[in-house]
Length: 318
Image 1 (cartoon, rainbow, N blue to C red):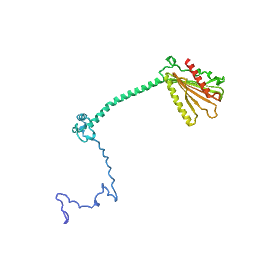
Image 2: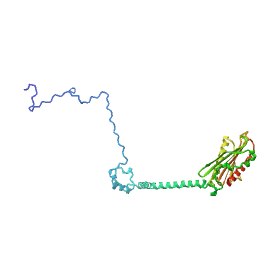
Image 3: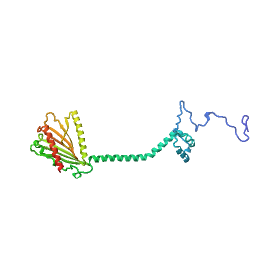
Image 4: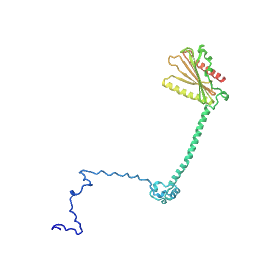
C-alpha cells in the first residue's frame, strides 16, 4: 500500500535510485587525501636515453651475401652507411679514397707480422755486431804468449818490480810491497803492485799498475780512455783549486805515452810524477812519489821511466 506522496512501487520489484549525497557522505576508504596548501609533487625521474649509435644500419648488413658485397666494394665508412641497405651502395657511392683507405689498412695488417719479424732480425744483427766489436777490441780468448801476445797475465805483479833504478833515492832501504793483487775480467786482467821505501814521511812510494788484454787493440783503447780522463781531471782540478796537474806527451816510451805531473802544495817538498803508456797488449801506469825533497822533478822523471821499462822487460821475459 502506498501513501499519497510516496513513490509508486516498481511493478518489477525495483526501487528508485536514492537521492544524490554530498561529498561528506562519500566513503573515505582508499581515497587519496587532498594535498595541503603549498604542496608540490616530486618530479618524475627522467629515463636515461641510450646514446645514439653512430652509423646504425639495418640488419641486412649482417648477412653473408651483403658482407661479401661490402668486401667487394672495398670499404663503406660508417658515416655513409646510415640507414641505407647494402644494395644502396655501389662503386659510385663508395669513393676511391674510401677504397684506398681500406686497402692501406689491409696491407698494414698483413705486413705487421712480417715487419715484426724483420725488426727482430735487424735487432739480432745489431747486437751481434756490437758483441763482435767488443770481442775484437778487448780480446778473442787468448790469455798467454802462446797465442802470439807479448805479455801474459801475472799471478804476483810485484815479482817483476826491480828497485835497482831507484837506489839513489831508496838509500839502500828495502822496498816493501803494500799491494800485490790481480783482478780477472772477461777479456783482460788488472794487476796492482804498490810498494813503499824509507822512513814514513821521508822516503817515498812506487806503484806499477798494469792491465793485460787478449788483443793489442784493448791496450790502445785503455790508453786513450785514460788520457781523456786525465785531461778532464786536470781541467777540473785547475778550475776548482784542487791542485795543478800538467799533462804532457812523452816520446821514446812504449807505443804512445803521456805524463801527469802534480804540483805540490805550497810548502810541500813532495814530488809526484806518473808515466802512462801502452805497448802491444799491455797498458801500464807507473807512479813515483818522493817525499821531503829527496829528489828533483827531473830526477823523479828519470827514475820513473827506468822503473817502468825495467818492469816491462822482466814481464816480457817471463
